[in-house]
Amino acid sequence: MKFAYIQSIRNEISIILIILLFFALIFYVFSLPFDAYVLAISIILLLMCVRWWIKYLSFKKNEHLKDKVAYL
Image (tube, rainbow, N blue to C red):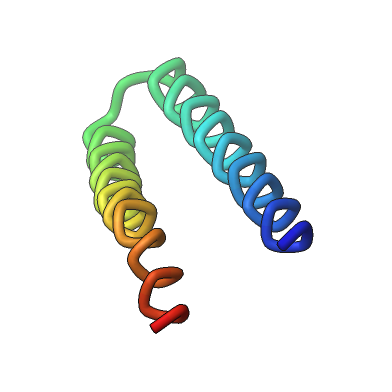
């Protein structure tokens, strides 16, 4: 049980770091001189992050169900 708790904390920290790095990348991209390819890359990265975040939230929402099924 303790290992699972430590693992979940590690996952939360890594997710926070990934999000911070993503926002730093967006800030860096938008601070560059404006070009169409920079805008396209930043939009693609933003869509990838949103898609990943939705998958992560749906996984977290169903995570407690996994424990209930294991106890059946």
